[in-house]
Structure formats: structure tokens, C-alpha cells
Length: 432
Image 1 (cartoon, rainbow, N blue to C red):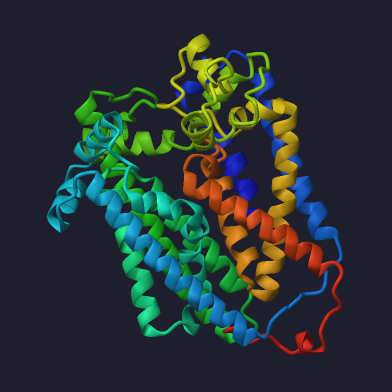
Image 2: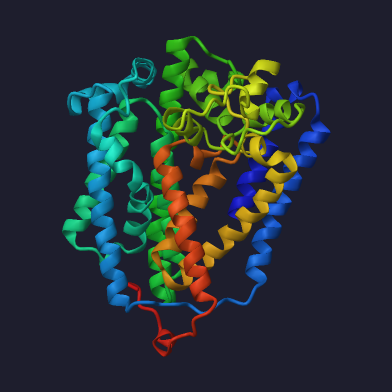
């Protein structure tokens, strides 16, 4: 229900903005979005209607807990090394420079593109070494939330330091992507932890704490987004570029904050206009790399692939319709359709729904590592449906998701052929 409310709610909100008047094909747009969402729901329902397979515990729960602690420590170290490396690459000199970027996020945002143009970023040997360990980039936040009570004080501190440095980097470059991912993975972990608590009294107590923590994290994210987008609009002169400022809101909070609020409202909605433009173009196959820009860049740089003759849908739409592919969003669907066609992209959402339900059920019933991380990553994919294929935008997320899919498939195959152990009939404790 949360996923459907988000996916259909953002689409409904789009029609309340001024951008809706620019849609030339409203019927085609509505049929596709409702169809893709319906297939997602059908995939979810089909998975949930299946009889649950036995929960397989290849090792004792104590061994599983040891593995969780090892992953939390390794992931914390990964976050620290990668974040410090990136901060240095982008010119951070210490906490004061990060604080200066927080106060003036437009400056950090502009500096980010200067660094990219200079080709300085991602040249550190640490970045190359950590690239195959992308699974660690998706492990820290969900595992810390789900297994918080089972972690020592030192592991909690290490994890919090890693998360703090990770967020510091994104604050330094004036970008909300990393902050949003942390909040989404935090919420995913809370949903799993809340649903897997067995005792009602404990569940009610933890539910209140989780609700307060989740609401506070979300409020801080929205407040920073308003501040950041207001600063960008003032710095770059883009006031009212997408969603017009509401005069009533402007009278109460002032022009800069009103602009930030308008941009935040347009953030998860304007991509549907880009989708409407993409739907009007014929299909041209992108050689299997159109849905994941980071994979395409990697293929060009390492394998010498020339993809300029087979650009993805968003790049072709920029040329044909003038909708900037790297500045504005067009939802996840054109990226997927670049390799799968639009009917294939809609069918793919049915597979997403199937995996979403399967990982949720397995994570809640057993708190196993792979389903927990799989569910958190699929939450990110779903939240970014109105924007882009977020899991294909960064190398570490591609590696992390590919690793999870492989492990999830292997566990599913093993789970379908191994009998249920007697010890699994025992009640699950909160730390399991």
C-alpha cells in the first residue's frame, strides 16, 4: 500500500501542477503509468498468494549474528574510506568547509560539476579498490536498524561515523541523493524491525520510537531540500523554471523559501512530463546498457564501446523534444524501455513487485541479511520511480544490486529444495 500510494500519488500530484498542460498525449501517458503500476501490484499479489517456502537457516543463528556484525564493521570501514576519499577529491579541507557548504549548498553543487569537468573525481586508487565491494554500500544502514540491539557500542559508533561521513560528503556537494538514500534505507529497516517484533507490548513501544525517529529524519531531509533548492534557484536564476511559486505561500514564508517548497513539490512529479515526451519516440535498442548510465560509462571507458549511435530514450528525447536528460527527470520507465521497450518496461515492474514481496516476506520472517538488503534497495528503486533508474546511476549501487540478486537467487534455489529444520520451529527472538 505504501508503494502504490507513492507511485500513484506522485502521478496524481503531477496533474495538479502547471506542467500537466504541456502534455500532448494524456491518454497514452495515463494508460502506460496505470498499466505499469497494475503489473507491479499483480507481481506483488502473485508472490504473496504463494505458500511461504520453509525458512532455511544454513548456519546457527549465532553464526548469522556474527556475520551481521562482520558486515556492519566492514561496511562502516567502507563508508569511512570512500567518504574521506571523495571529500578530498572534491576539495573539502575539514569540518568548516563542509559547514560552509551546508550554509551555501548552491556553491557546493556548482563545485561538484567543476570537479567532474576536470576529471578529478573517481581517480583515487581507493575508489578502484572499493569498486568490486559495492555490496558494502548497501549493507550498513538496514543492518544497523534491524539488528541495533545485537550490536556492541563500538560497532554502533563505527556505523554512525560511517553514515555521518557519507552524509557529510553529500552535504558538501550540495546534493540530496545520498541523504535521501539513507532515509529510505532507514525507513526500510524500521519497517522490517517493526513487522518482525513478536510481542505486542514491545511492538507498540518500538513502533512509537521508530515513528518519531522516521518522522524526524524525513522532516530534516525535506527542510534541507527546501533550503538547498531555494539556494540553487537564487544562485542560478532558475526561479519558477518548472513549478510556479504559490503567491499565498510566498507571502507567508518569503520568496526564497517559497521557491524551495515549489521545487520540492516538483521534485517527484515533473518526471512524468519527460515520460510523456519519451513515449512519443520510436524504440531503438541501446545494446543492453541504456537502463544503467553508470554501466554504459564503464563499458565506454574500459571496453571501448561506442554507444553514441545507440543513445537511451532520455538522450534521444533531449535532442527531439528539448527535455534535458541530465537536468530534468523522466521517471524510471524510459531508462528501462531503452533496452526493454515500453511494454517490456511495464512487464519489468511486475518482476519488481514479485521480488519486492518476496524479499519483504523473507526479511520479516527470518531477518536474513540478503532479503533485508534486497528489500531496502527495492525501496530505493520504488521511491525513485518518478525520477530515474536510481540503482543504475552509481557504480557501487549496480555492483551491490547485482551481488544481491545473485545471492538471493541462490538462496531461493536452496530454500526450495532443503527441508525445514526442527530448530526453526522455535520462536524467533528479537536479536535473531
